[in-house]
Length: 174
Image (cartoon, rainbow, N blue to C red; front, side, top):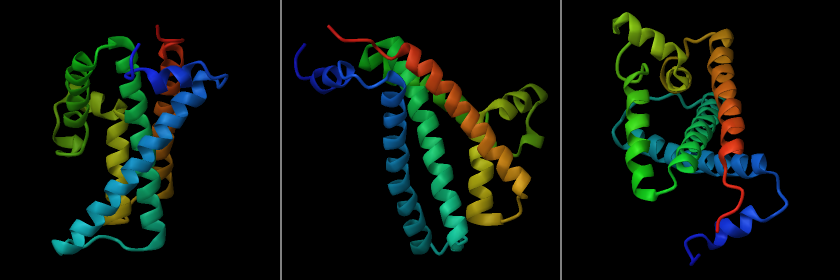
């Protein structure tokens, strides 16, 4: 077994439900995302980029980043549970996440996309995370209904991925 599986093996034999292990990993990813958020804010100061500095806006950014980090961490856990080998996981992870990025509204407005890509963008959780981040950091133009939709889609995606990851999370490693 070696040291590679030592800590994971100890966690997997604990009496904790698999769903809590999955959610714990998601929370850890969300917290790592918060540290990156502070770096982005610091960089915006250095580059003289005007962002919204109201407390509510910053709290919204942190909540959005935590939810997004949790979603992609859980998605990665699903891929890792299926693939099993680290080298394959890294390649497959990129093959899956990059299209999600390009099929969101992060680079182009949805209205400029071809019809089929607009449909993909509308079911892509990253689209809603980008909307929320733009609103909280830059525009302040979204209504509470828009933000409710953004967070609703994110929470739904997270819950769905937690269920899938819980089923796929390894029972025990030998």
